[in-house]
Length: 200
Length: 93
Image (cartoon, rainbow over all chains, first blue to last red; front, side):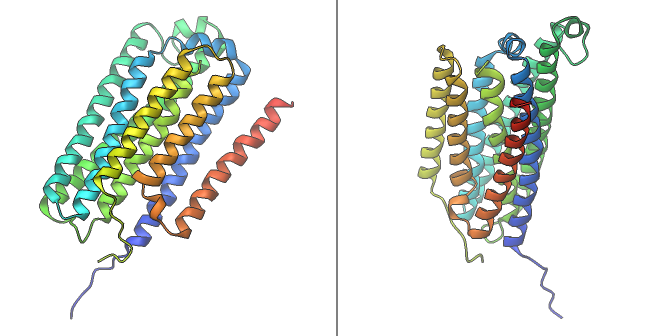
């Protein structure tokens, strides 16, 4: 008896997109909170927002855009049958993910070193709008950073499968879905960057 | 094999990346000068343009069928409705 493993790439991709929509709504909720509190505390948000380093935010934006380019090119490479190039490009994505997390670590540790973290005595004694800004900042960039780590791990596993030939030019849906997740991480940052680092 | 395979060339991907970098430079430049409320609108408009590029090219939405396009529209419309209705309350309370 010949056994064909069930395989439906279109359905797999549909499932991934449905999941990405729930992610959009999750971050949408956080952006909504930001918008409502910005309306209520415009002055405090401006004071707090200017304490973030926009050069670090810009660096991370460039890094994430580049990582997305590598992920998209990795899919093209695999579809063209250039598996080794696909693995190298995924390595580029992971390198960018690492760089992003290092910059994030520097930013967070600097803030925490200055006594700025959710529930810190420094924020409790300050204006309520400021502590709300930083709570939202840590919550949003924290959940986003978690997505970077998960996406990086996912792409590392997929890269291994490309190398071993399980994911190939005839069977690339796993890489396609992994790349979609990675692009979503990039997409969310595209909004975090101006809202937290630039407009205040 | 997949009958609906769309391979996006390297050149197109790199071109999209360059456009995204240019828009990033633009959004930084626009928000470094004092424009008041205009800079919020400009920054958000640029962010929307950037995400449009990412979704259309990097995420291949340009080459997808009706089902995914409509679902994307539905998700964005849901987001717009709940942000819009919240502000209807917040602004006119």
